[in-house]
Length: 218
Image 1 (cartoon, rainbow, N blue to C red):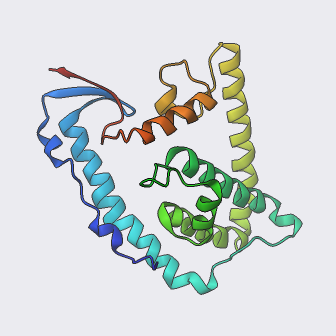
Image 2 (cartoon, rainbow, N blue to C red; image 1 turned 120 degrees about the vertical axis):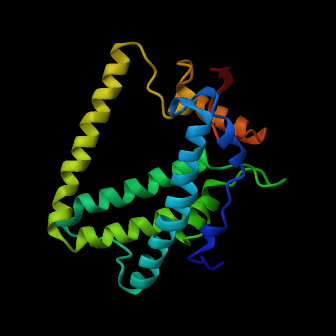
């Protein structure tokens, strides 16, 4: 199915009624927020900035440059970190899609990893925009030595920061959570988090505000 440039313009916010909830606060992934003010901010970021400008802009850039974009990373020593980045991006995106964005489809259940990978490689579904971003980024990386030389700094810095975070958590007796949104209770390990997410999706729970739904009147 052809990915139309302005399809995202059709995405509508079904929670505008929350704009009027200015006297309520709620604890969420984003912190303790005023429901009305946050709902307006969420609307601007997602339905105006992202869907009206950023997503179409990426699609236009991709379509305009598609024939010249790099589809792979050269197998040469100077591109070692670019290949690592490419593999990390693919694996992380597929795992994220399978774990966090894999609701059951009718009676067919959840998509398999193979189905998700097929859609990703075909640039269809909700990872299509991620694939486009990766190809544009790869093209810039392997055709500009300044950017490709930046990669090892980024990747090694990420590694050491993540390693220290894991060590600090272990020393403090804390679980190193994969996802903040299900790890906030401090009781789940990554495997339990994945099971939790699957159960939530199966039950078809969902709301514009994720987190503690207990509201407090000001």
